[in-house]
Every structure is written in structure tokens, then in C-alpha cells.
Image (cartoon, rainbow, N blue to C red; front, side, top):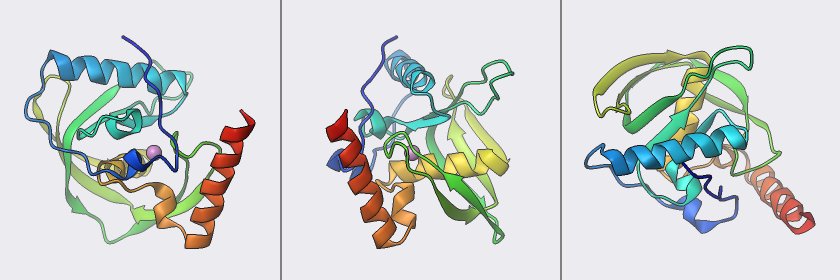
Amino acid sequence: MALRNILVVPDPILKKVSASVAVVDDELRALMDDMLETMYAAPGIGLAAIQVGIPKRVIVMDLARESEEPAPRYFVNPEILWASDETAPYEEGCLSVPEIYDEVERPAQVKLRYLNYQGETVEEAAEGLFAVCIQHEMDHLEGVLFIDHLSRLKREQAVKKVKKQARAA
Ligand code: NI
């Protein structure tokens, strides 16, 4: 396993639409292992492949609390089969937009279909933080960041702040 470099705004690669994965094989599992390690090291709770520069429809996630055992999850070619009309706000952040947090409103419940680490098809309902996180990560597959859901002013301020941090580092 190896740590990958996480891209941050305004890197244009983050705007790319990711391509479907043809087969879940050992090469893809190696990518997912690297992504998980990179996410844990950051630390973060979700990461899409495009955030490490790989335009594939792959997401890793772990929503376990610090006091709980790690619970890694893998989503390949995820699709939203259904989304509730009811929405809920959540203060989101993103490893590609470091130190910026703001409220985004999304459907409160979704139903998903994806391939897991073994390449098996899974259908699953999500609500709460899981629903927030999977929708946030699936946005990445379309080249959309959570700041794209904010006003233009807030988005520009966020990018400016991240650039300033990068210069200071
Ligand atoms: Ni993100």
C-alpha cells in the first residue's frame, strides 16, 4: 500500500468526469487500498479516486467513530436508484478543499447500487451521515465539489483561502 497525493482546488483534474470501471480486479483493489490508507492518513471519512488524480468511479469511506473498530467501505460504479424529496442540511468539508466547511442541503435518504471490494453488486439504503457522504463523494465522480453547491461568492472565497494556505505552507 502507498499514500497518494490528494489534489486540492483549483486543480482542474478535480473537474473531470470519472469513467465507469469495467472490472473489479486486483489492480483496482490495490488502488482502493491506497485510497483508504490515504484517507485515514489525511484524516478523512470519504475519498473519491479523482481526488488522487485517477478518473475512475471509485469511492472509499469509513464512518466509524474514533472509539469504534475501523469499518472501511468501497463503492465502485455507484448509482443512486432513488432519492427522497425530503432534504437535510449538513456542514460538509472535503480533503480537496482543506479547512473549509459549509452547509449543503441534499436528499435525506437515498437508495444505492454499487459494486463492492469483491465486485459483487450491492443495493443499500442510506440516511444520515452515510447519505451525506455518499452523495458528496458521488458528486466528485461528476467533477462537482461541495463548494459548487454554495453561492459564487462563497465558492470564490473558499478557493482563495485554500490558495493562500498553499502559499503559506
Ligand atoms: Ni470531497
